[in-house]
Amino acid sequence: MDLNTSAPSVAALRIDGARLWQSLMDLARIGGTPKGGVCRLALTDLDRQGRDLFAQWARDAGCTLRVDAIGNIFARRAGADDSLPPVMTGSHIDTQPTGGKFDGNYGVMAGLEVLRTLNAAGVRTRAPIEVAVWTNEEGSRFVPVMMGSGVFAGAFTLEHALAQRDAQGVSVGEALAAIGYAGEAGPAPAVGAYFEAHIEQGPVLEKHGRVIGVVQAALGQRWYDVTVHGMEAHAGPTPMELRQDALLAASHLVAEVNRIAVNRMPHARGTVGSLEVFPNSRNVIPGRVKFSVDLRAPDDAQLLDMDAALRSACARIAAERGLRVDVEQVVYFPPQPFTPHLVEAVRANAADLGYGSMDVVSGAGHDAVYVARVAPAAMIFVPCADGISHNEIEDAEPAHLEAGCNVLLRAMLAAAEVVS
Ligand SMILES: [Zn+2]
Image 1 (cartoon, rainbow, N blue to C red):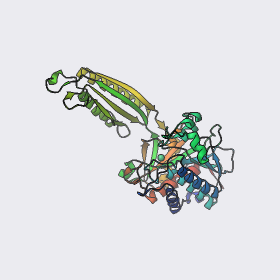
Image 2 (cartoon, rainbow, N blue to C red):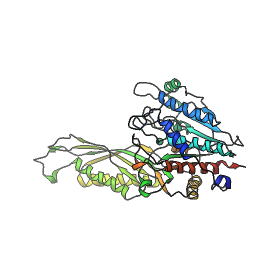
Image 3 (tube, helix red, strand yellow):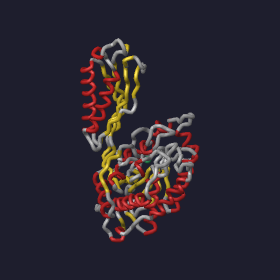
Image 4 (spheres, rainbow, N blue to C red):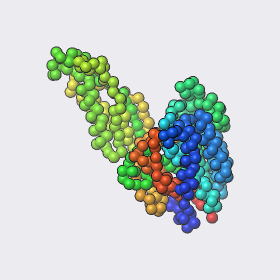
């Protein structure tokens, strides 16, 4: 399979950037906020309106629609050989409470724009093309995040997902039925290849002046609770050399966590985001400190190496300072590499189109990360202003969105094969 599309008619094919932008702006009106963002929480009536609009647009583009039991929508454009597994793209249209117009929505509207472009040019593909709208990616109203793609990939069961409840006690199953998107249960069908276009949600592309991020992998994550057990004592009468200061030991460990990641740049991350001090009193030497550690890396070997470095730093500082440090891992999310030949198709087509690209990793979760467990998958990142998302001021350049969608179009055509 030649993944670098070479047929002359296809090589000249481009998506309509203005039409893509208009779709994004039209969708953003549903749940639009005064500050220019979007509040469209999963499985609310606003989510239904967004789904209905997508479904109407997909039908207008000649697609057949299927909804599965967790509410994922699949819009299918027939191929010359419909026995082949589809070449799929997609993302999500649910948002955070103070979300933006582009997170997720871009991936779905880019897929729709690919369909419209193929229709306008009369292009037939051998494999069918599908655009997926995954249910509840954000995990804001219902936990866990990436729910629809997680069920699709078998990361957790349908029953588990349907039973989750929001803060008002409404279950996912009830909410799906209420908005009319509880579809049919059944095994997830095979996918030939999956591409997801998404805003980067970070500052790397913008900083380097690149338009296309060729996503190599999603970072694996290990989260810990670390507790330092020292001894409370009076801040006045206790001489410095006779203290077991839990906060002082913790402060050295905070610096170690940073060093563990800095020593493994550019892709490793290490963060202490939360710290509790006991008794947290001005004139008491802290007797106990509990803090969080979040380590991320693109492959398991590096993540395990960071795990070992954290544990040895804890042991060393405990020994040096004569106190106890307990390390408990509370979350493990494996690194997810994307499929090399699809990643290469993204890179090669970006180059062919003359877009500056660079290899990046995804520090956040995406539907593609779960889909990659069951199908060949890759992601295309485009810059967002100042790297900001999950914020009403989230913004992106129309030209960048257009570029990402052109790369998506060509990568999908190469995977689906054009039939002349
Ligand atoms: Zn997203």
